[in-house]
Image 1 (cartoon, rainbow, N blue to C red):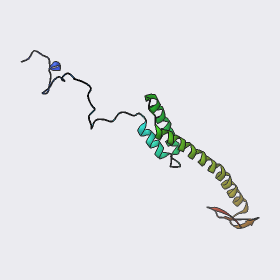
Image 2 (image 1 turned 180 degrees about the vertical axis):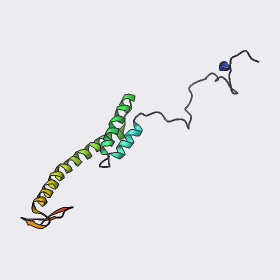
Image 3 (image 1 turned 120 degrees about the vertical axis):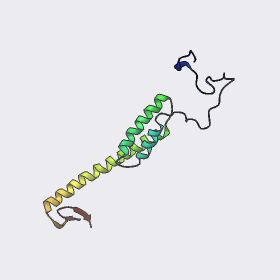
Amino acid sequence: MSSQPDAERPTGAFPYAPPSSGPTLPLPYGQPPSRPGRVLGIVGFVLSFVFPLDIVGLVLCIVALVQSRHAGHKNGFALAGLIISLAGIVFSAAILAFLIPSMVDLFQTCGRLGNGVHHVGNAIYTCTPTSAYKTWH
């Protein structure tokens, strides 16, 4: 029996690494270098193209940019996703700012006119209990 405790007993064929004779090259199949925020930036970039998810993409891109900047890296996907998300949100807000008042006016007019097809000026309102249409002639 040996007098060494189990914690100090070397295991394996080469218990200690041989002294290094110079710089070592990285292994070809090793872990890639860590790039904080890269995956979040790519996910945010992809989500920035989908209308209801562009807000989630914006948040992910901001988080990815902060993580990358703290690590001292640039993150092109996160920056591009941030710009595309912001453009999509502004565009969607502009469309909604036009559509919502138009839809409210349409349903208020149909509520006032009642069910049926009504000619008002150059517009034709088709009003039913579940839908409303407005066309121009």
